[in-house]
Image (cartoon, rainbow, N blue to C red; front, top):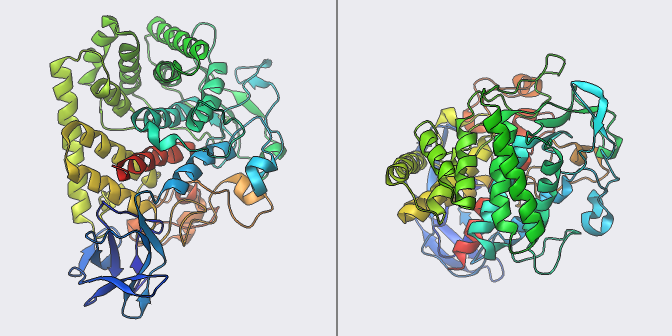
Length: 540
């Protein structure tokens, strides 16, 4: 990719740093207005430096002091970038698109043309589903979202996605005042909460009378590339798990607070479900990690083995403490705090949600617990800042960090940086988080915007069954894919991505590349949080 200009393909917030990279060296660059053709800004690129994750030699193009609203391109010699914008809100359409990605992934109902356009489909997965350990018993588990490229639905993954979305709304409500084009839009309630209700209603169906929560609804084998209404695979409800119940407990407690001003009855229902889940956890203290039965095809599950329940329990205790103020929950989170990594917002490591609840909540805090959390948070934020400075692209990753879900990690790392900014008021943390968004949107070694339907060179062939099985040329828009992964975890990447490929270039835009190009709801939700923050930040 010699002599190429790589930048955020959507644009830049006017009051934020604005950087791009040029592969190679150059004496000067120009920012050109597309309407007039006039050079509006010029500068000298930084010295050429090696980027260790891509093996590229890059020069930094810094035009941070140029803040004039408009549409531009960068010119270096004969090289010309794609068009981008500078404004206070360049990500408005992106935010709505990422959120509408959840609508396109809804399960159990038809998507009609009025709201889905060319991506409409018929009703799917609306039948009663057999219990895995007793197939003669069936249960209504309709609804929710298809989790990823397939048609499974997973309790833990849904809880993580809801955690991202609900905290995004809670922390930046003004970013979610616009309508997104979903059939559930109502006056007086933001669309993000109407969409979250889809996931919450499904989770409530996954809870048993004694409070436990079923781990997932999925098939036992891979399904063919078909539209959801044509899925021939038989799905099952899999047994309850501690992970699912603890995450359910946390997210329903969180949601009960957020929905109270909008729907008091629903808020109460969520609160009672959360308490019942906690009772189940107390009545079943011997933790057993969920494992797929041997009859389930390897990697079909879409969820991840997790042998540590402490982070899930910490999150649940923090949310219940914030909701109730009861000292019993405060005592439990104090007990767990030293055993938990509080700087992650992911499926297997979600202690960051508990930290967010505890640090930003209104309840009295234990000074030692607060200090412990803050030390972890500051250490992780400083490390991400350092990694970003060592990268030619500003990416807060070492070469070893390009693993499955690397794009999601870029967004959850940004969440850590945003929380650290909220606590420590360190501007460098925000600038580092912004560079991670730039990376996702095109300032990366592949020159790809990793969100379908956005940017001048977006991902076009995600591992996402409706995108491949429908009759449209373009994929479902607004889906963020998992990104470069140097671990070659599927047959296609093992044979088609060279073993010597640099980690940041272990990506293939084709639906067969499951481990690099799959879309997931928790990728989208993390991106909603980060984009929602910068939409809010850009207007200040």
